[in-house]
Image 1 (cartoon, rainbow, N blue to C red):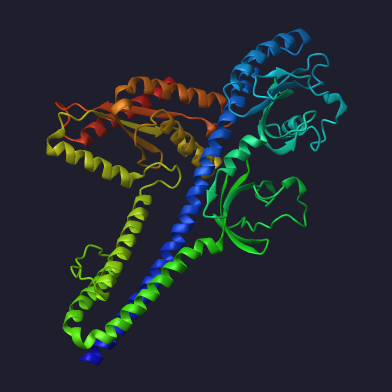
Image 2 (image 1 turned 180 degrees about the horizontal axis):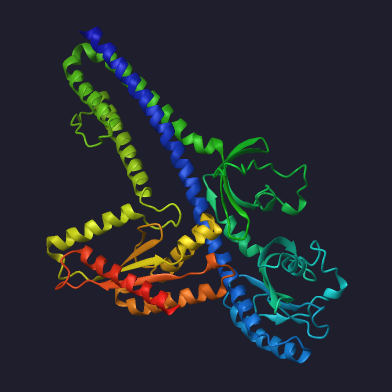
Length: 533
């Protein structure tokens, strides 16, 4: 019996060690990758939010410029330029990190009215600077005077990679929009951002002991790196970043200075890529230490149990049976089990270690389940999350809280999605849906937003959003008009039918009653919108 018990102890300890090693290694690797990607996503959202604010500022000015143009005579252009100067100054002062802003008129349009160029080099305010003499350059050569020649050549708004400004010698990135009047190229409006403003945001991203972030393009050319002087890089010295253009994998592995590294990357709205990198040894070191500690602990338990088993066979057998049953429950996906052996001995410590390990696994799986409630395209909550949310609200209502509940349900339906998919393809349809989602989230930013169908969204308005719902509805309508007015293509517009229904405790017996009325209101709005066209 003693020999049999020792064999059982050995078998159980070895089995638990193998299972634990597999789980620890898998979980720690996933945790490190998730942490890496989460940090990258956070940085991407912060940078994109900043870049988007710059884009919106320049595009609003561009829309104003083209709408204000009433002719290309010198007198008309001079008066037009003065009006634009005031509009641009107001917009630039509200945009963070702007180094210069300009409206430059093509010399081919007027050789006397040149536009303007303002800069803020010391943070004391914008001062006008003499504009660059474009006549000294070949405007067809896109390698020179890139802020003017590239948007003229492309014929559409464009982000330019970092470059050294003419006359100032400062490293900047810029966003530029070409201006047209009746199909004729007139000039360029643009904003140059101080390169250091962007660099500060990237440098703030840190991970583990030696993790950091850097910027590159899709070909692996580095624009900013906290450890490298980018201006000194050559084809021979630049790091090789093995982006997979076909698979579009979020993670890449590469070697730099003899150190194997792993990086998570995400594309930015200005065409760059944000990379968050860390040495592979730092991501794996944690699980290796955990496994080593566990193996040492398991060995101690095994030796002590083997020596003392002849005295404690009956005492040891029972908790081992419990551990075996618990392992089987975990294998079946059941984490709610009871291990009541709490004595301060080897088996007791093994039991506690097992409980902590399974607890970590349960938390990890719970976290993965939460992620399953996010819509992959728009990043808002999906229909499964919507169903759960409504069920929770209905439960509170059934438990007697209906009199105290105050909420409204908003239902939204994107017009013309099928036509855009059929005419331009589903990729453009996805752009259309993302635009609608961003507008809904921006206006109802304190309310949960759900995508409940292909082109349908829903919002549960509570608290401040519920109180201010009428104002938010007007903001939403104004947002649709603004987006559609500035859109260059049909799929960039926003045409969304909307219906809002307020919960009435005397009228509504369930949350679904409110949803039904919101749905009817939305369809009535959709019919009215179609009739109005």
